[in-house]
Image 1 (cartoon, one colour):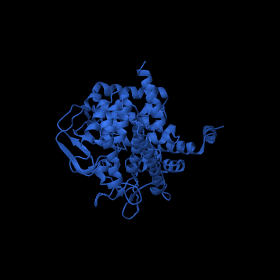
Image 2: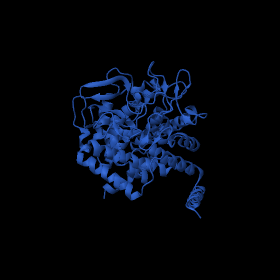
Image 3: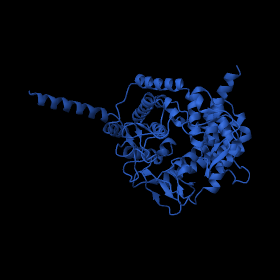
Image 4: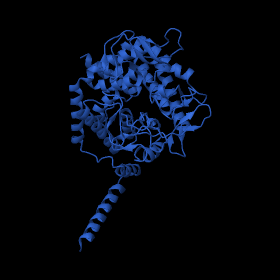
Length: 449
């Protein structure tokens, strides 16, 4: 038998073995495994190796002092300790604050997140502003980007702070204002079909997103916005339960259920197999392949079928979102795709990596979720080793840092993304009211001993 024949036989045996392995798995996992393999996004590593990468990253962040640098002392209009994402920024931001607070929860530090919530809510209903309106950026002596609204993360911030502090009394004076922020979305930003609109791309956080109509303003029904508000309803139900406001628990759970159905039906484009933003005036889909289309996976509002289709066609597809370094903010199929200087038009952001990782886990795609987590940690680790800091976003072709540096913000979640991918831990998870009540009784029973 010549050398070429032996090679052919060995290759055939390998392929047959692979076919047997795939055949023993369910269909959706087989699809995800094959697409990930085709993406050349890195082979899975052992649990020990994955946690070793995470430990290196944690040590470097700790030695750099970043966990303390993001916490600022009271300053001017900001009367409480608050969180700042670093780099050139000095103001209090909305969703950055939430993810920084989630990362700090692993250090059992919740005061600065609670302080940030108090500072935001201090400006809710401020003077003659519209009921519930809260500016999304605040510095010590200046309100930024008015009239853009604080993204709907305040209830999630309050819940995360409460879970970290094991205290809810701090929230009692602010509960009514927190509820008012959701009243604002329902009264000022709700379309006739029941969905909600972004004022512009900057308000959405994805500043130059081609999926958000900025001129004229207040026209885009955002997939991500609907999911964030859905999570706000769940968080408010938990907070209402802890504060003994049982009628509010049922109210917010009912609103969450109705919004979930709207997302599944109104924002799902069956022909494309993905969620899309809609134009609130015309009802037409805004067919832009942006990462925010994937947020229903993180919020766990997509049906199992919708998730399976979208994960196969888009998430794990190297021609769409998947890369060796994480999730593109915009797929190459868009004419707006700019991987180097595109900001939200192609580069990789750690916040989208984090959300998509949990989205994959939510629907049983554990293997690619772990690959994504490990590669995210590696990207950050390489950046720190090379530049001494972390960047705002990363090149999807090389993994090299781009944008502002040194940037902390949600990049700090990279220190725990591996841990959350391999375990049931989830610093951004929202328990049911029953689960949170059980936790509350457990904590207070322990503290009373």
